[in-house]
Image (cartoon, rainbow, N blue to C red; front, side, top):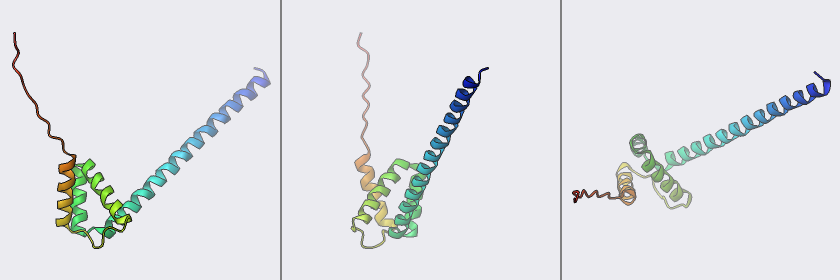
Length: 117
């Protein structure tokens, strides 16, 4: 094995290791940013929802995660825009959930037709 070949192979290994380290660092940074965004979201929700309303939203998240996410985004956008003046109670949250759920549900109708021969 020539020295030049050995050096090229060693450089290739070093380059791959460096790329892997950089990829892992980017993933770690992305995960850290995601955790920070989630913590910020939860802090806003804690500030604008009563404990009962937060509990209801947590239960909805278990059963209908897409509905919970939509409601959370809606409430956070209202809070950031200064539209929420007092804490949202469980009763008000129920109304918001019902309104958003009725808008997002699609009525599916299935028609079964008999075969014609």
